[in-house]
Length: 478
Image (cartoon, rainbow, N blue to C red):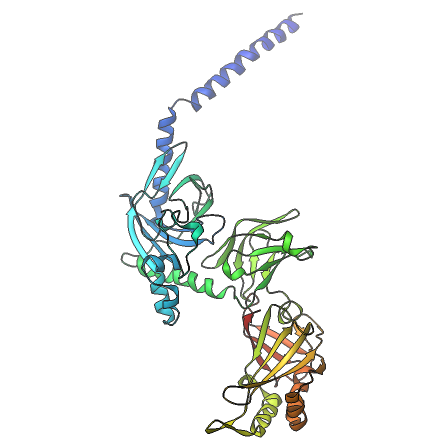
């Protein structure tokens, strides 16, 4: 009986003990005013931004319809920040037109796009800590003002008077565990922004470092994707695949390769190119797979750091890239090697000199093109272009039907020629032309390139005679 009473007494005490514990916890949580906690959080973020040199890279997106841009920010404890960037918008702010920059040297193109200026920063306390760039910086606030900053001679009337509606104040969301990353969200647009810590630089070397870093980003923007390779692929490693169109715009269109109607099922994603990486603003999803961040590989392709499997590349250089009906490949005859070179030179030497106005003109082989003929028949063709005079050419058309012995290989397989007066004249007169076409068409070729993402130029080498070969360049988008 006493035992039962003791147990009952203990049970009666439990709610009191529990209530006491919860009360203590509640007092620990709310022993400070909300404003005080916000002030402490703001001070903590301010210290976080300025410690270890205060140098950060920001991956900035103005909207979900525009490409992202890299900025470097040097935060100082006194409330000053040096912001550096290198992009076409900065060039426009400086009054330099894109068309006026085309003929300059590579270094001049970089300096024209370069801008660095100092302004003020502050951590505000709103519903949470907010990073505000609260004095005007011409190279950063250009995305936030209603001023119309055009990067070309043609104006987009849809943005007149509105600018690009980007943010200059950002809600601070969280810090990474290692203290190297800061995650923010635009206060107005609510676009996620990532900042990554960069190494502190010795006194006086910040600007040189920032320039070199951003110039590498600029080069990556120019070289990672090529407009002449309009179609690349996101391969998930299990057969699922997105086709990514016009990636060089950094706002590509994507669709499932197996889609019944690519036109209606495609969607766009804006992206950003960084120092050694590439990212989508929002994760790219396919079924249960989700990827967003990619690291450039030695072969030029991009490997997802999210799953370590998904790859962005031009796909198989033969069946995906070389026979893509959206582009034309041109052979410069000067790149022929071995027997191909010997036969080409013999053909060129035999081409006659003709009367061209008041002077004599030596006919020559201008180029050889691999392209897609839409009419009168939809066929893959090889076009041999001969300069007949200084103003006229004779395009000789040969049909081929490709096969692909192995990955990154192609055999063109000659299937006849287009009947024409020029074709009959040159084909029947010059056996060297017949021999050159045979050397190109009837041998399996190994394809290789410096970049598997932008494989132009592409080296084409006969598998059974590596002393032969040529170089083909993607010349334009059809």
